[in-house]
Length: 529
Image (cartoon, rainbow, N blue to C red):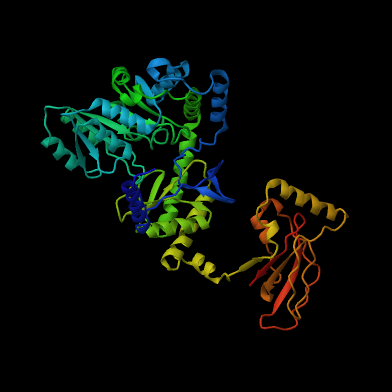
């Protein structure tokens, strides 16, 4: 049992998170191809992932893992220095070195572990580490773990970095570490300035290229390649879990640095080796990027240009660079409201709040993938306009006016037994039963008693039909039944009546009742306007 003092601490933390709109919950998604996810039964276009090249759902990677599992089994069975290193691990590190253009590479269980393993091994007491204020959490943790003196400079403020370097002790070693493409802000570093400072002060320069690896540069070697200085970078860490669509991390380095890490990096020495099947999947991901990466990067760049242009034309400030586009909204509650409104439009855009970003600087982080289409981009921009209208109450042109003109609709489900709790086999049974009726079989018994009809109102449609109440002005408009919305697999072309239905005899609201037959279900629905 948790001690009372600790329970009080946990309760207080939960209360504070709730009051500050900082509570987080894990949502279970079903990942789909083409940049989609299912949240329950709702399909969302995923603009929140780091799957920049759309490889996370590439079956070739899954098949490579399956082949390796059939040949080698799953786990490595030990740490790399004991029994965990296989021929597949060796091949993977060679493939990483070739891809990044370095002498050697060393793989870790994750990108987080790669930063921990590298920095904590290189620096120690008496050394000074210089870290960008907006570096990833893994870099912050690595600097603290090293035991060295950590100096934090303002985000991309290289003048301040120079002052800090000038004021540091020359007795110990100096190490400069930074993200190359910042994962939330979406901006990139000035490699030339950093190289100049590192050479002047004899500091080792380390770049975390996780969000640029395989995405930027002619060969996918990241920000340094875009800025034509990749050959001058000392050390690079990156991840297989972003553009490569897999999992794991690595350090691309010289042979000497690799040998040092093998003997000194505690996260490497005291962790079990990456599963062999995962190593095989990472090899296949690198092979795909080597063969198809340039085309994927060009497609991604085109989508990014379109989205940035459309967002700016719609009045949004699209910050950052490349495929990461932050839309700053400031207030945490406002960010949550934006995200919910976008989700209602079929777009998954995650809100970034403290401690991921500073307090009061909450934002919507949009990340574009090569798996997206032009239509996805246009839908996202339209969804942002609608979300802005709903959150701020301000008009957004034709879109807002069209939304405002739509009447509120209330849907009453009279036969709840067929609308909830169905599994797929039950749905198939209903479909088969309905189809037998169409073929001339016995009429099935109604699934629920009919409600009493109001006085002088037309009779309800017989069992097996969906009855929809529409205003007279919309009597000729096409309608989609709620049964089709809740169960897309039941959707069929409606059979419209050949004659106009009779008008209600009297009543305050003059309405028209139309009957549509749902061939593959026996649910009856009233739709009131």
